[in-house]
Image (cartoon, rainbow, N blue to C red; front, top):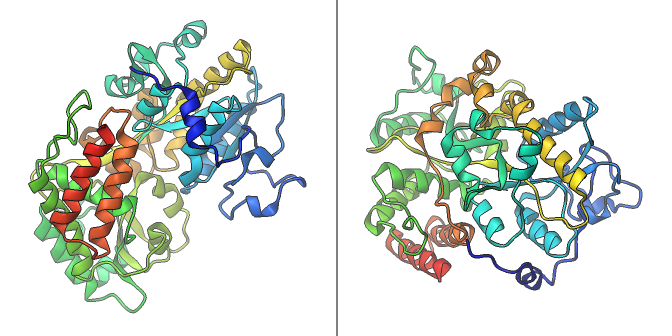
Length: 445
């Protein structure tokens, strides 16, 4: 894989202050840290301002969607085992995470441990932001082949080298409010699920729910822009038989524009038919408030939803609305950012934590709602007995993951920008997809 010099990352982000990896998970800000730098959800704007415990490994995370507390517990439990070296974690704002990680590594101030989506990992490998871990796995006598599926391992392997430890698969699924559905006269099947086998089946349910919704409520909890309608478009496109966005080596756009337009028109119809209220900024919190019949959301919402008082909900796999029963998904992985100041002993200890967090912490992580990557966790009775999770385990087999290309995040950003023009009424579906296609081409240049 062709590498870009780290200096390019640094140059591209000169306007961003250099960052030092540091932090204490779930701890109050230090007196030296400005309170304005810590957000209500516990994310930190300026990680360099948080005091570092030099005797601990520094871990940067991006889990601010309700799953952060579960990673906190994994770290706390790990530290309680008196490991080779304890871990200290800081949660960054999701939208800033990768920019700050890449900038910090370029400045030789990166954290000891980090997180990467599988879709972002090719870019980080290409830029030299992360380093392979094979030699450390060998020293620790860890055989990943016995712990993960071939697909999981393929997503973290580049040119025969392992660059990350798989943590989970997180997919877009369907949540529903059972009280509202009952009010609308919609019955569940014997498994407590909804029988949805076509677009018409689903829209018939939406119409029934809409008829009983009041002011300030929405049939579907969904934002009017960004990742969430994009993920619905992604699932619809591939359910309709769409081809991969690019060819296998990432050199040519292979998107089927006609199918892409049809998928975009379907998503737009959810807005046009009045099933989505305007102005929903946080669709998960909106659903938690009991004001929506349905939520298109990620598996990571499960842990937060089940802790919501008086919310009578259920979850099931992404519905089969068109020809193929597939869904959108991505994966979290644990990475070893390049850090010249980290000793070999600390690096080995960092990899030791990465393996433990996925293996021994896997059941705790499943509590967030994510589908754990570790096979032993998936096969355990403890996991199977957890409420809701088993109802959408099939997403592992249905998921259409992003293309394994270093250009994907640039492609994704361009696709979302193009689709936003459709959701906002600035363009029709054909124009939005023409723009999306051009964005894909531009990303490959």
